[in-house]
Length: 95
Ligand code: FES
Image 1: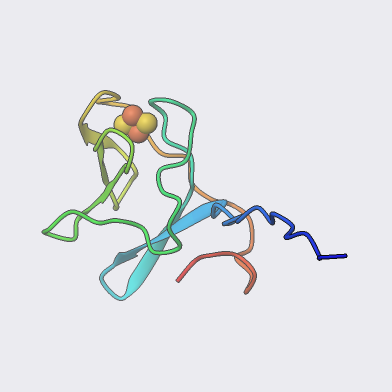
Image 2: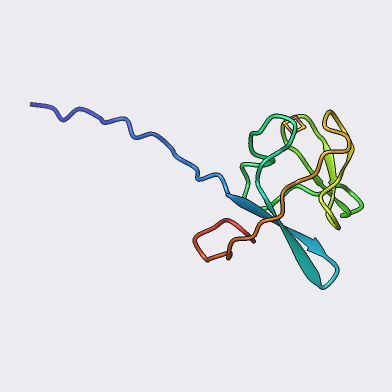
């Protein structure tokens, strides 16, 4: 009897927070876009603007100032990212 191939779903964990570089420091935000309530990114490395000063939402391209999480362009203009208050651990995608 031939073995049947089993389908195994590919599951990529979506990070619960994003770490954005700010000079020698970093800001941590929940990985939730205030526009849709969905994740800003599915990637462990958050997308940044070309100037490196803004996080970019991968869904509709909103730009969030890293300094304070304020949306400065896009469909949720004036909204803010929520700061991450949890402790980052090594299992989180935070690099
Ligand atoms: S979901 Fe982020 S800008 Fe629309």
